[in-house]
Length: 359
Image (cartoon, rainbow, N blue to C red; front, top):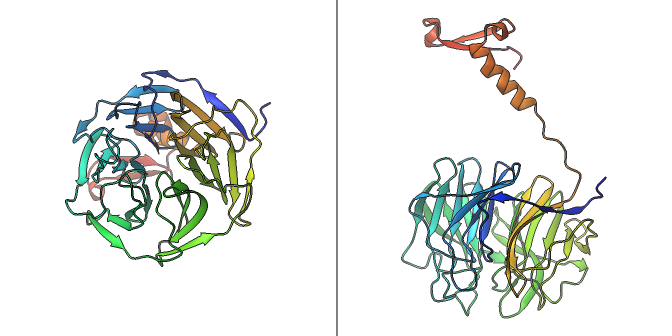
C-alpha cells in the first residue's frame, strides 16, 4: 500500500485551464476547487474554473454579474456559511501600474459576481501580492506591494456594514513584503516568508483580539535565504510550506511544529511535483492540493495532492439519514417506520413531514 505522507498527481479531464501563475485557489464544500485569474507571461486572465476533486473534471464557468477584470497576485477567501468566495486586489499585466483595490464576491450557487467595494481613497491602497484572511465577520488584508514599496498597514473589511476600517496594530511589526502566506488558527493569523527589500523566511503571529504582532523565533531547517511565492497551510499544530523561491525554485516540503517552533524537511513518498513558485494551494481535510505555478521556463496547469495521512472514507451517516427522511415523505412503507408526523398549520392541515423522534 501507499506510504504516507505522499504526493499524488491527479489526472483530470474536462475543460482544463491554461497554464498560469499568480492565480488563486479557493475550496468549497471540501470538494470543489475554484481557480480565478493568473498570468501567462504576457496577459492576465479574468476566467474562472472549477475542478470537482471527486470526479476530477474541470469546468469553465460562464459567470454572470460584475466580473472582475483580469489580474494576478490577488487574494481569494472562501466563506462557506455565506456560500461565496471573495477576491481582492491584484494587478493587471503591467505590474505596479495596474494595481487594484476592488473587493468582489462570487456566489457558488448562482455563479454570479458582485462588486462589494471599490473605494476611491486608499483604504486599503491598490496593491498586489498581499494576504487576505477571514476572521469572524471580517476580511483582514495585510502587506503586498504597490510595485516598488511595501505597505505594512492592516485593513479590515466588515462583511456586515460592507465598510473598510484601518486596524491599529502594535508589537513586532513585520517588514513590508509581498507574496508571503497567511493562515488562521484560533485567534491568531500566522504569516510566513515573502519578499520586499529583502527575502524573508520569518514567521509572525497577529492576534485578532488585541491587534498585537509577535515574531516567532524558529529553529531547525534553514529558511535564512527567505522564501516567497510559496504555498502554505496549517493543520493539527503544524504549518506545511511547499515550493516557492529563494533565488531558485524549490520542490521541497517543510513543516513547522507550532509548539516547539522547529522547522524540518518532510520526507515525502511518491512522485514529487516539479519545483515552482507563484502556484496556489488549499487545505482539504488532511491534504494540501496545489495547482499551477511557474518553474522559470514555463508555467503549469497540473494538480498535485500532498496527503499528510491515509485517506479516511467519508462518513455516510448524514447522507443516509437525509435520504431516509426524503424517502419517508413519499414512500408509504418507510412511513410505517416513522413515529412522528410534524403537521403544518398547527395541525389544521394534512400537510407535514414524517420523521423519527430520536433524530
